[in-house]
Image 1 (cartoon, rainbow, N blue to C red):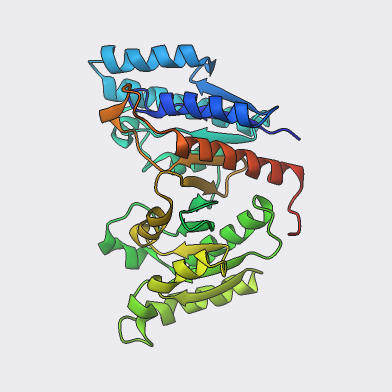
Image 2: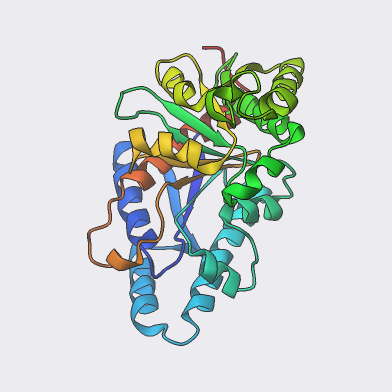
Length: 318
C-alpha cells in the first residue's frame, strides 16, 4: 500500500509554509511514488498558492492577524482530520501554529495534540518525541506523560491511572506503528534517584510501582521506575525502545540534547498517523530563507513509515 499523506501549513505568518514546501519537495524526490498534499481550509494548495498566501499573511494581515492566522491554521487541520476520518488520508503532518492565534480563532485548546484528539473523538492520546537517529546514532523515543504544565502541578497530575494509560498506549503504538513485536519500555521516575527508597519522596512507591505492575498485567514489558539520570542513557544504548517521562522538561531536555533540529513529535492514540516537527513558528526568520526544513522532512519520513506499517498489517515481528 502507498499511504496518502497531507501536510497542514500551520500559522501562515511563521516558517511552517516554507519548511512544508521545501520538505515536501525533498521527500517526493527521495521516495518515488509517495503522495503528499499541502492542504488548507478549502483543500489542496499548490506550493505557489501557499507561498503567496504566507507572504500576504505577513505583509497584509494587519488588523485581526492573530484570529485570521489561527483560523487558517485550525481550519486546515479540521479539513485534514475530516479527510482522515473518512479514510482518504492515512497520515497528517502538521506544521507549527501559534497557540495564542489558535485561541484568538475561538479554538481553546492547549495545542494541536488536544485539538486532534477532540476532532477525532480519541479518549487517550500521548505525545511522543521520536528521533530514529540521534547524534549518538541510536534512536530515542520519549513519551511525555504530562505536557505543558507548571512544575508545581506535575505531582498531582501524575496519577497511577495516567501512567498506566501512557505505558499501554506506548506499547500499542510501538507494536502497530513501529512493528515491534515485544517493545521494551522504561518508566522515568519523578524524584531524584527514584526517591532512594523513600528518602526523596513517596511517589515511586505509591504511584509508579503500582502503575508498572498494572501495565505488565495488561501485556506491556516495562522496567522502572528508573532514575532520570540513567534511563535515557540506557535507552540510547538499546535497552529500551521508548521511555515514558513524567513531565515535559525531564523528557525534552534529554531528547533535544541528542536530537535538536531533527526530532519529530508523534501523537499516539489517534485513528490516523500524526507527526509534526519539533520546532515552533519562528516568526523572526519567516520569509527570510533561513528556516531549516530538516525536522519537517523527518516528520514526513516517519509519517510515511508509520502509516505503511499500521495500514499494511497490524504489526510484524522483528
